[in-house]
Image 1 (cartoon, rainbow, N blue to C red):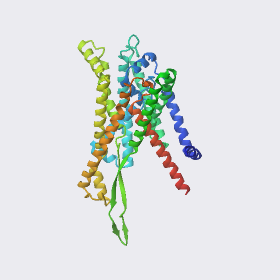
Image 2: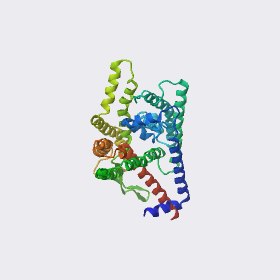
Image 3: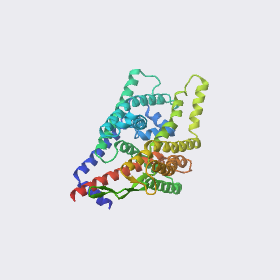
Image 4: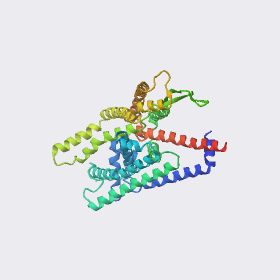
Amino acid sequence: MFLEKVIQIWKIKDLRKSILIVLGLLVIFRLAAHIPIPGVNMVALRNFFSSNQLLGLFNIFSGGGLENFSIVMLGVAPYITASIIFQLLVMIIPALEELSKDEQGRRRINQYTRILTVPLAVFQAFGMIKILQNAPTGAQRIIAADFSPLLLAQMILTITAGTIFLMWLGEIISERKIGNGISILIFAGIVAGIPGAMGQIIATFDATQIFNLLGFLVVALITVVAVVFVTEGQRNIPISYAKRVRGLRMYGGMDAHLPIRVNQAGMIPIIFAVSIILFPPLVAQFFLRAKTVWVAQAAQVMIDFFQNHLFYGLLYFLLVVGFTYFYTAVVFHPQQIADNLQKQGAFVPGIRPGRTTAEYLNIIVNRIVFTGALFLGAVAVLPVLLREVPGAPQNLIISGASLLIVVGVVIDIMQQINAQLSMRDYEEF
């Protein structure tokens, strides 16, 4: 069945061309992720990343470029941040909400998002350079403590240009209608790190840990199945359309359903939670070398506090659950849906149209979001728990955000390719 599907895809010329172009762009992205910026001690950089679990989350969204301090070290993180900001602003500012209702307005919002990405990339590049410049790595420094303002400006300009380049690549990939370009770039960075992790596992393989490795693989497989199940899960609310007589014809009278997904927020809550939980220890890095003793001590206490796995896991879980409720409330409007149903002559059987329908939808969504929020929180902290298991293969433990991205991107690619295949079958018919 799988081989037949691949052959069917390969026979369609434009679909084959789109897939080859996307693969070519991903190769360019991976090459760019291995072009380092001059003036960096790569050995000290990798040692610092191996000892800092929090910065590993940043490395995920950079597609591995941050670990190499490459020209695309920020990845698409500034663009994701800009997108989230405008998603929230659309819900708050009436003018932007009005723009989002038509195609031309959405294009303008996309343009605003691209413009906002530039200053965000400059700010993040400067912050990351300063953090690595002051990072405590013993005798070796990652970046020289003193270098000219011109070199600093060149580094920031190069990093910002790399982010804009990846944003452009992502938009080209999206135009091929194989999947979301930004998500595919992050997906490629995550998948690219798997062979190296597998190689380290094989190189350090110990026959006495075979059962630990098998147990870990079983847990990973169950987790992937659960992620697919919840990602695709939805509650179908029955909808009926009232019969209408126009002239000599009768319209309506059909039944349909309103799908409400279990995980409406996607991985946005995890991105929000990561941003919040990374902020205090990253800021504390700036004050580790402060001349005032109590300031340096307070910074070290803050860093140690967040490196406590129990506190980190509990806070991470609570933030993910809270942001899941918050973002669902931002994107799902029961009153607006109830008004649209009433305008279309539709209603939920047994529920009065209007305000009563909105209250009913709100109750249903809150129940579903509770399950989705707990699941997202569990997936987010699962890697933290696995790292505490003796004998667990640390190189294969990826973050919950990585797992959600990989599964979500694969599902999205499969759906879009199947949609294109179905469309072509319909055209032939």
